[in-house]
Image: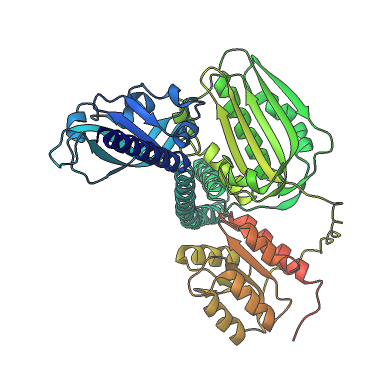
Length: 534
């Protein structure tokens, strides 16, 4: 009998060891992390997946430590004081999302389901430990934050574009009326000085709207082939005056870096903003700013893991680096430097790096910042590289002789103040003006008075039918009627849509009265070279 009992005990032990081995194999094979914490809060078990997740080498580097050591302190507010209550919970899993601290100090976003392990099988048995099944959701959180950032930028871009459009219409009224008032005054005096101040203030306000549009990625781009190295070198003297006296400027340009398709003026603004930012970071101390250019290749894996501010496509890029030996920035500051009007300077104001990001977004580029307190800052800008030989430039149209003012101009704009100012300015210049509220009404007026109308001014953004669509319809009626497209944010897409149309040009809002007259005269002069269509 005793022998039979001994044999039975050995069989049970073997079954127990087999079951333990089987369950351990299952746990070690899981892709999720497994963590067991005893009643005192100390780690008693981790599986290989959790060791890898937290970038440790061995399980014994985690076993024996208090669970609080694995979390960022702010993630555990109140947890240690509520520890007995957590142990005493019922058997339902507790699901939370928290940041674990990896061995190198990096954050690992996790989603965990935690249950209480009890000493006995009964519901009233005392709690012995907590078991947590942990999933790494860092990549999902990164993508979620990137999506939220993109949505925020899109929303702010729409808002900025709308504000700039309406603001530019107001400035058309300010500048137009100031110009009309000037023409009424024969002699200079205090009134003319006041008009000068009004026009100066309006132009400064116009510069602010350009920054808003640059941030929104809707700036008016004049796209052409640009060599980034040559652009920076040409700015050398200007850059030298923009930095502090104790700051040394160093250049390092790789050979054979390709050109980019970009707006040179906008890129100069990017370079100037980055240089000013670098100089401010150094302050009154001595330091060095380094500017360099390289060609880089971004494959699909690089794009998927990109920490650049912007959406990148795989391909070749030109990288512009601006680094400084200044004070550097904390991670919290770096997270906000592309926000509009964010500044760490007492007298700081404006859009700054937000405008830079908007400009790059409009060029299908991106920007990245690397910085640490006391170790300086490096900005890396990526722009799509061009391959192949430069395209031949189209021969420039020879300017035609000025034409005599007169005839009828059709003006379509949904803003009544803009319509009023444009009508008064052109009538004073000797033109007859007919008005329309939008593109659809403009087509109706043009159809009724086609024989009289010498030229058309269309606002790009109008209800019912915008200027670009109205232009397309006008071309079906009269292929050579001269047209001015007026816009506070003539986007790159508008420029592309106008490509090859020799009788439509862009009129950027806001415009002074004299500039409007000159633009209309130039439009009609250029159209005088074309054969009339009857």
